[in-house]
Length: 339
Image (cartoon, rainbow, N blue to C red):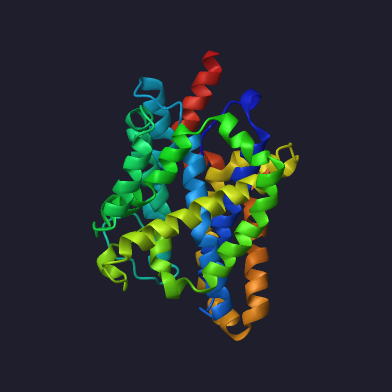
């Protein structure tokens, strides 16, 4: 969700962003389904790697962030203002339209999808320090393991700490490192690696718990013995990294036209898809899929993909982008007028 000049855009990164934002919408849509063995398996497989992949790419695209006026203004425009606007908007929509109960204070306890904006903002603020030396990478792993001892919803600190290694890894890897993902042997190994992760996901509740995949719960909330909880978090992180790189290796490097162009609209998709998902719930989709498990899973998945395509399409983006950040749009128009 980082702006990049049109002349310097990497089509592979835009393809990656399209794939990952689609998995975000699919994952949240699967939350509408009844928790059968099959849906639980698919959900755990997706969540083992898609959040780590998203965080890694965010870190990779944050390399240029420094503590200067221009970048602080961009941080306010791209992350802070959308968070201040959409956190209460989605909260009140869920409470008053969908009839959901949402504890926690607005803005201080990010609700549902909005956690990523505030956590990414904090990672960006720490970027100039985190990218100083590669030793911050092993240090971030230690921070992640210890971070599980922190049990609070305040600014989603557990996720800020727990997912930190993926962000720091993105900061430190160079384009030449990611180019190795295109090697024949890496691409050949990606599919069996994902199949292996899929097999492990089938038994998530045996060797871990689904709550560990979200990185938002303290260890005391997860029924895992204290003697192995650090090892289990480390194992989840390892599978997340392998799965993320496997998927990245399979993403085409060339421009794919409209599919690649979708990668420029990830913020609109991220901010607005929650309203559509919760509208489906309010209309009784959860109850219908409970009675039609197989076809419900298929239709939910296809509907999530279609929702992503619609929100990322140029006409819809043109309509919705000004709503994501009115102040940012004003700044953009002012820069255009002065250039």
